[in-house]
Image 1 (cartoon, rainbow, N blue to C red):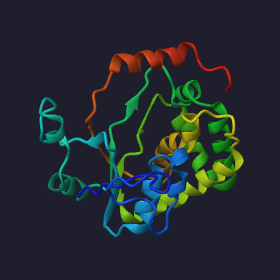
Image 2 (cartoon, rainbow, N blue to C red):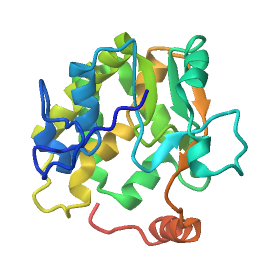
Image 3 (cartoon, one colour):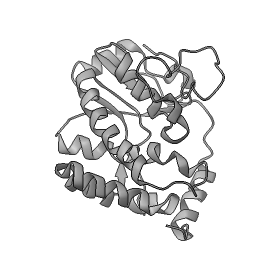
Length: 237
């Protein structure tokens, strides 16, 4: 069920996989839209009842395999996922918990505050019915991140139409000329903060799965970075 896709192939040499630069696509935006160029390509060019996105290093985990099994063996397979989707329209990774940070403060300590300010203004102007859910999500200390999900095609089309309408407007209004290469990935970062607002507003139920990290995760380093951003936040907003 997995289709490897080279994201941003319009910008990089081919590496032997199908690319996100065929059909209707935004492959040339990959440096700032990250994996969303692949999502945009999939929703416009892939014909399937369900469409989802995972990452080269991050997959949904099987519920049947022990967490102590080899990592690749823990990646969920088609038969198991089909049974879950028979009872759920959407599959998501389990929520990420910050505990001592809200989704809002975590973002502004790691990125630019104006990213969220401009996004909120766009939502208020273009689709105000989502504003309450957006604000509620920002006040929480947990949420569904990583831009990972599997959805029925019709739901994904609705989500992507809403999502990219906001992001393309944000691209027009946000001045990123002074951003670092990392911060210029803003549209990928912001999109992670929009999914829950869409789910809540549309009252969409879902199933959650654990994540398998195929690469080693240095949790001590990640924790240190999180605390440093919390207590020594960036000063440029």
